[in-house]
Image (cartoon, rainbow, N blue to C red; front, side):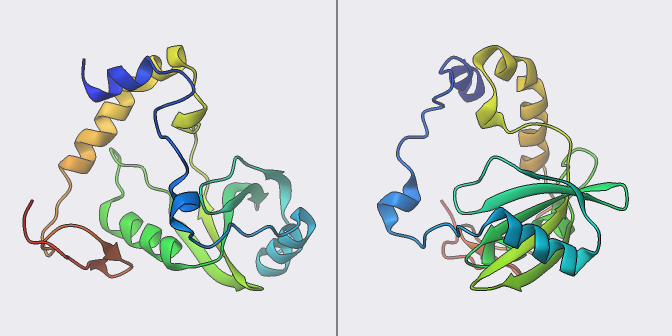
Length: 173
């Protein structure tokens, strides 16, 4: 069995273990009220509809909404650094075989930041039961193949990267 097939058998616990942020002592996820976030989105974008809370990420609050008949996701985080990396990855690698949502806006929101991206169809892999996971495994393998086949011209080294690209800390494995 390959790694994806082994994960498919693990059920809801994908073997991720303890939350690494809890272990590392990283900044806490923001806890802004839904009404504050909706008001900020309306101020920034204009009229929004279908505002809904989404499953949160490790570091961010997440909301879905519609504006002018298009779907968007708003994520709120204490730092904009990860959002800027997301924008870099979209600009550099997005394509038909690697659907990475476009980041349309990153802005301060009190002592946090909001990132607005186009909403992509689908569900979070973490939310799939083992049968559903097996059903999407071929698609996941296709995305992994697209990632491994990405054009890395103009990059060097490996390891960390920022919004401008690699900040290679190592030259080889």
